[in-house]
Length: 323
Image (cartoon, rainbow, N blue to C red; front, side):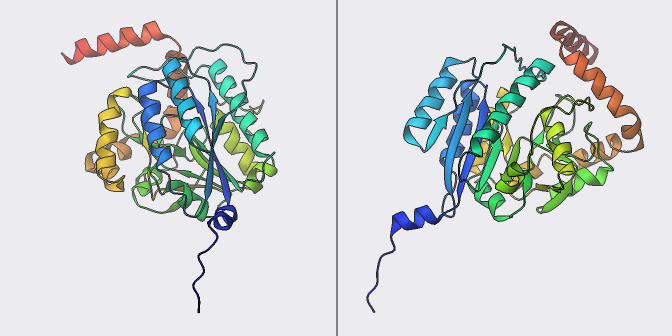
């Protein structure tokens, strides 16, 4: 029997089309690392297309996006008429003021609307400071779940324990320490909320998921409104922990990204963060007191985060007390 070479073009067209979307407003040093890993994304079973919204303050970041789009199946979405909104990132924290959140809501909803104009099978929403391992996008698509996020780990404040980008209750709480501790093990888990690294199958977008604010809910972040609406539409939310990404929350973490890659994006890299001492801190901070006190504490911290001068003053006082 004569061997016939498969038609490579036909095989490419048979692969499901997945759009990767990221609203970009990050330093060029961070974006360079993120784009490095998007270039490496596996595409044996998927045809990936990359969309960006260029919301950059750094011209070098815009240049990096243009260079990526010139050499990949990619596009920068048209500019929206948006009100200016200053976004401040420091080594301590990121300032998500209401006008910044409103801006990102419009950008993400614009991407959802543009996605529905295509025949793509899924939309992968990923923040512009999240580096994804090469197998991740294909892995999440293969799970065949309407809405699933990959878990990454972040110190939201310099002295806080690492926490995931998923939660149980929409002010960021967890039902128990085990809700967090279980995420060290590879698998899929039901969660109450998620964001920042999320695969949406087409059915979820067609049914009307949205980042728009729900007027009766006073949540600060757009992902919380998205998750409440998705749950009301009948979708269970899932977290996956098989291929954790690297969240570059602080530019001081950039050397660690190289070390993570040198270990071939291994889960074990992050398990070194989630050690016994970390587990003890989670058990101490997540529980009954967490349910009673954390909502008010988070509300106070959200208000505090808008006062840059006060934050800097508290930082100086903290250093003096530790001296």
